[in-house]
Every structure is written in C-alpha cells, then in structure tokens.
Image (cartoon, rainbow, N blue to C red; front, side):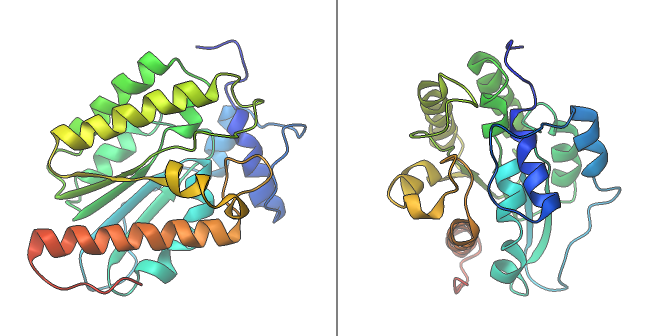
Length: 235
C-alpha cells in the first residue's frame, strides 16, 4: 500500500452526490467504508431491457460518470447491467466481477484501473488485471478501456503517467494473448479531445461521458457482429 491517500478518487463521489461534475483535489474525501455504504454492491445482477444480448459494465469513479450515458446508448438493443463505485478497483470488485460473469453476459466492459493507480503498486495492479481476465475467460467479448495517461493531476499520483502507461501495456498484452479481449483506447482518444475532460484531466465531463459510452457501444456492436455473424447498428 502506498503512503498517499487510499481514497483519492472518492472526491468524485462528492461531486455526484452534490450534482456537480468538477472534482477538486482540495475537497474532502470520504472514508472507504462511507463510499461502500453509499454505493453498495447489487444484491442481484439484474439487466435493464428485455431483448438483445447481455452487456455488463463495471467501473470506478470514471465509470460512475460514464454509466449515466450507457442506457441511452445500449438499451433497447442490448440488455444492460451496470455498477460503478468511486475508489474501488480491480482487487476491490473481483467478487462482484465473478458474480456478474456467472450470469453469462455476451459482453463484459471493465472500466477499472484508475482507482488502482492512485493507491496501489503497479506490480500488484498488473497481477490483479491478469486475475480479472481469468475470471472473464468464458465471456465471448471482453472490452477493457485503457486508462488516461497524460496530463492527469499529480495530486492523484506523482508517477501517474509511467504507471498508467505500464498498465495500458499490460491491458494490450492481455488482448494480444486472449482472443475474446478487446481494447477501447480511451487513453489515445482522450489525448486528442481535452475538451471532453474535467479540470483534473482524468474524469470525463458530460460530453466526454457520452462519447465514451458511444465508443463502447460501437465496440460491442463490432464484437457481436464478429462473434454471431449478425449486423449491428451503433447507437
């Protein structure tokens, strides 16, 4: 465990509860237990929608912003289950991930990694990534976004860029050796669209969240078309 605050990304929870979209490193962070109480894991894995292939989305504080746009982008073409919790990462959500995978989704989107970089050693994070990929082995299509690399507020981690680059390299490696894993390169996309980001240059604003969800939908369509040989129209 690093000496810096374990709950750096919990500040985003404050912005969500207060209705604002601009986290500030000078704000007041919640304790981990508080965040878990505010965002408890679902008792059951229920899907929104009644037709179409099943899509699971799991995320951290970035996911909490992106998932607002997910239903509009995915439903009714897909059945959707989503859960995100600020401060939580690969190690924290591994149990829920296994429960979600047990429902046999067709697409599993894992927006995880940013919370981990803010508080854990990169060696542990890459090991947890491999464990997560093992959990998702039987999912036909796994979409794993890269994490933002450049320009992120140093308050989260003074070594953010090299550690994010190392994590992204590990994500790409997993996609290279596991046929069902696909990379959504948010690191590259966001680098070219700074207007889609909040002032910390990590979290997306309203426009960025919608674009993020739109890109995930396009990848899900492409993956499903390849897997099931049926045409899909991106939303």
